[in-house]
Each structure stands twice: as structure tokens, then as C-alpha cells.
Amino acid sequence: MPPVFAIASNIVSGLGMDTEAHWKAISQHKIAIQKFEDAAFSNTPFWASKLAPIQWQNIDSQTRCSLPLSPFEQMASYSIKKALDELDEPIDLSKTAFILSTTKGNIELLGKTTDERLLLHHSAKQIASFIGIGGKPFVVSHACVSGIVALQYGMRLLQSGRFKHAIVTGCDRFSKFVLNGFQSFQAISDEPCRPFDADRKGINLGEAAATIVLSLYRNRENDVLFVAGATSNDANHISGPSRTGEELAMAINGAIKEAGISPAQIDMISAHGTATVYNDEMESKAFELSGLLNAPVHSFKGYVGHTLGAAGVLESIVSIESIKHQMLVPSLGYENLGVPKPIKVSEKFEPANLNYALKTASGFGGCNAVIIWKKS
Image (cartoon, rainbow, N blue to C red; front, side, top):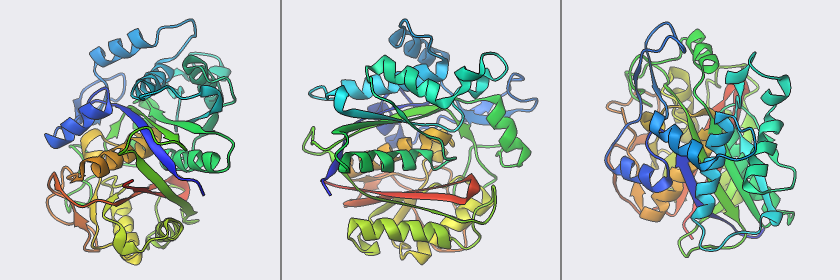
């Protein structure tokens, strides 16, 4: 199969408006999660990561056009525009696939607009039109593995010869609908989340847009390679993860086999790490079953919360930047191991020899997805 490169990226979240700002925030251990008291979202206080008004002003000024874009579509369009601006030379959009990863899209407009406006493919068409892609866009809406699956699909499209480039964008807004849903599960933490920690209480939600431009052609010498991906399903429970971790381990082993490497060659793991009791336990078991207990592990959700459809793309960008800078990312909120298997949770922003980074994700319906990035 031909090599696939990640040639540009962008992240928009409460931490900043581009990838560089996020990397700087990581180096300074900054956190975007804060306490809100807003009756428009919840009758009780909640901790979350949201974009600031000045960020929305920036997004609005950069995405004004004749198209009737919703805030969700504006956020995604802005992220794509900024990612494309990173390229040394523009790519041919006629040979470029656009893949949108989201779980809820315009759900905040429910009851306020036409049903068509809520359809994810309608949003994808609006965004594709804004960035100048005339071909039919693709949508991946597969719970919290959406971003990872969208990236895998982009890689397969390029390797099949159908396209030369792929723009993969993950995006979800913070909404009352989603917050109330997770509150009904009693899964929302009343403090900044603490993935893998003994005192973790659950998740924080976040909003973000993140874009990775994939290509068959290298843009810069240090572009990172996308080498493998695999999926699996627990077939166990509509919302609870597997209790054994065997199914996530199947996906991990499948990706490692496709990459043509051994488990010992994985130098870093970007875990799903939601800070819920069962997800973190399951992941630790899966890492043991896959022979990965020696690999440093972090969750990025301690910085920006769980960004749903954006999470897989956003957290992959952090992995890519880790490889480029040869630095491990600390897992914020972690103090004492609170999972049954002795995983090595990263606690410092420190240099490391990183050749292969593995990214995991799991979601409702028992879905699991794994991808592997490689230093070029």
C-alpha cells in the first residue's frame, strides 16, 4: 500500500485556535475545563470546556459568506481553512475527499429549524461548499470512535487510488442535549476529570473542531506517517464497555499486525481515557492483553474534556505533534493509579524516543477503533 502522510492540521478548542497554540498550552500544563453556572444548559453547575466569545467572534469573521452556515458548520469550516493555510503549496481540491466526523451536528437547532437542516449530510455539503470541494462529502457518525474511523476511512480512500488527498474534520458543539444525556447516566464529574486516577468521578464535556489533511504526497520533511488502523465491537452493552478489554485488544492487535511491528515497538499510547470507572478499567485490561504495559499512556481529556466527534481527530493531532517534538504528553489530573492493570500513565512533559504512537477510542454500542502513527 502507498504511504499516507499527515501534512497539515488545526485544532480549535478552549485551549486555542490552532495546533501550535495547543502544543504550547500542553507544555505549560494549561487546562480549558472550568466551572459553569448556566441555566440555559443545566439547572446545576457543571464543569466543561467551551469556546470563549472572542473565539466565536474570530470564527464568525473568518467564515462569513453567502452560505447559511450554522455555528457548528462555521467551527468546522474555520478549522479546515486554517489547516489548509498551513500547506506550503495548495492541494488540488478536485482530487480531495472531505470526511466529516460528528456525533450530533446541529442538534442544538432541534425544534428551531427544518428537519433537513439537522441532517449530517446537509452540514457536510455546506462545509464542503465553503472550502471549495465539489464532490460528494462523506460523513462518519459512529459514537465516540467517529474521529478515528473517519481517519481510517480517509487512509483507505487514498490507498485505493480514488483520491490524492483527504480532509478529515471532527467537530461537535457543547449542547444541552448532550450534557443532559450524560447527566442522566450520572457520568459527569463535579470537578476537572482525572483519567486513570483512583479518585476519578467521570467525564467533562468539551467542544472542539479538529482537522487533519492526509495526502499521498509529503509536504514537509517531518510529516508523520499514518500506517495502520483497525476496529472491533464488544457486542456487549448499549452504553457500557466490555468488562474484559478483549475486544479493544482485538483492534489493537489488528492495527499492530497491519503496521508490521511488535507491541514492544509502540512508544506511546494516546488512550480514550474518559475518566469513567469502567472505560479506564477496560482500557487498562486491553493494554495488558496486547502486551503494552511498558508503553507510556496519556489521556488528553484532562485538558479539554471529551469532545465527542472531534476527539479522535484532535487527540491524533496531539500524538502527531508528540512524535514531531519527541515529547511525552502528561495526563492531567492523574495522581494515583486507579485501574486494575499497572499501566504507565505519563505525568511529565518530557523528551522521549517516539517512533510509533498508538491511539485508541471506544464508544457507545461497544465500538472500538485504533490507529497507529509513525515518525517518517
